Image (cartoon, rainbow over all chains, first blue to last red; front, side, top):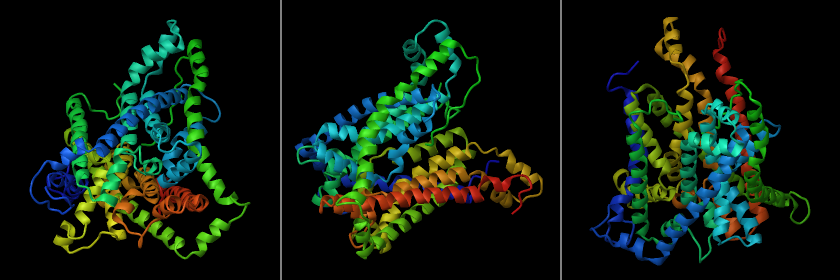
Amino acid sequence: MIPRRISPLRIVVVLVALILLVPTLMVIPMSFTSGSTFEFPPKGFSLRWYESFFSDPTWRDALLNSLWIGVLVMVIATVLGTASAYGLSRSRWRGRGVVRGLHMAPQIVPNIVVAVAIYAVFLRWGLTGTTLGFVLAHVCLAMPFVLVSVTASLDGLDRRLEHAAASLGANPWQAFFRVTLPAIRPGVLSGAVFAFATSFDEVVVSLFLRSPELQTLPVQMFDAVTVEIDPTIAAASSLIVIVTTIAIVIPVLMRRPEKSNPEGTR
Amino acid sequence: MASSTSTVRASGRLRAAGRLRSRSWWLVLPAVVALCVFFVYPVGRIVGDSFFSGGFGLDHYAQLFDDGVTMRVLVRTILVSLAVATATLLLAYPYAYLMTIVSPRVRALLIIVVLLPFWTSLMARGFAWVLLMQDNGPIDRLLGLQLMGTVWAVIIAMTQVLLAFMVLPLYSSMQSIDRRLLSAAESLGATRRSAFRRVYLPLSVPGIVAGFSLVFILSVGFYVIPALLGSSQESVVAQLIQERTSALLDFPGAGALGTLLLVVTLGLLLLVRLVARRFGAPSIAPGGDR
């Protein structure tokens, strides 16, 4: 069953892995350039673009806005999405399919259409250029991830646990918070991370909702390439790449010994 | 990424559990209200406006068909999206396949390699492609290819950016294929290749359908990569929509374009599903010889 060490299949897979990883790494050498263009390979060495990222108010505010909006989206989308996932998987009624479809719809409607639609309505409601506007739009985009992730955990959960809690006199709230929630915590947490990442990374809707006073980091990065030619984006990109890498590699490495079934909830 | 439908477990039904179950439907209300107000209403409104602004009519659509540009851009968008979905499928299939047969340790590594770009900021990856493909950049100098501003730049970058969205559904469907079926086919006289083609490939069709549909949907509405690497001479629909909205504030026109895009997306989803049903899993039913 196991192929020989060097098979065509393995060569193809190594190539695909390189395609996945290598292009993005280009931003790291770029971030140390001493020039002020995107000339690549970069000339000289300096930390000026990192300094610019943390000291330039435009970049710093964009980063702080993104973090703040991301946290709000994470909390709201996780609470609403978890409640929905629980409601859908723990009750049977007509229209459940429709409600599930409604939750997934933001992923089926082309992104640019969602962006223009939300922009048109938020413009009328005065929500463009406001934190609330960004949060509400991002929550809709993030909810599908929370629903999928929590639903997967709920499906893997032994129902008898809840039944046992109920038969021992727990009311539904107690049963949920003391039994169900601890058991589905991995799904809820990964949903929360997905929600934060969705918001933190969102470009298109944010490009429409931005105002001169309020914009997010991806929007500022978009400007840095399309409008300004500002190598600070290389420093921003490198930091994101490094933080993301650490955040993904460490849990996977730590989990290795016990992790044999990929969707095991425990 | 597909949501799995919960299975009804015929476990002992305590009355208390029944109460727990029937009462929990209202938990979906907050999310449903939020989605209706901030997603369904806006999308419905922009679709509606494309028909009804200035009295019911198809003026906004007629205009799109007449201007000579829009239809060309729409066709280009569909072709680019099909190219991206096909390219990701060809690259992701062997990758996902290998993921199912290697040791858990190698599999963990392969998963990290897929997840890293998946989680890394889209803007960082788009910017990296700008660096590589810019005039006088590495690809221009080493290979003599001036890709910046062409559809090829858009296709290549989108393929890399969306690869993970193909690998993950493929892997999750391949994971559930019983590999003993391959041995069975071979022991019944099939060559290794025909066992793969006649048994494994049809069984992996659900993953192919899921991945292809997902990547196509994401490509068709993709704005960022075309905006960074494409050009207005070779634009895609997302750029036209953005231009109509931001520069011209023509919401009914943008809505008509968006509605067209939506119809194309749903049409393709339906088509892929029909084709899959025709050529998919049923064809390996016992005795089903084609």
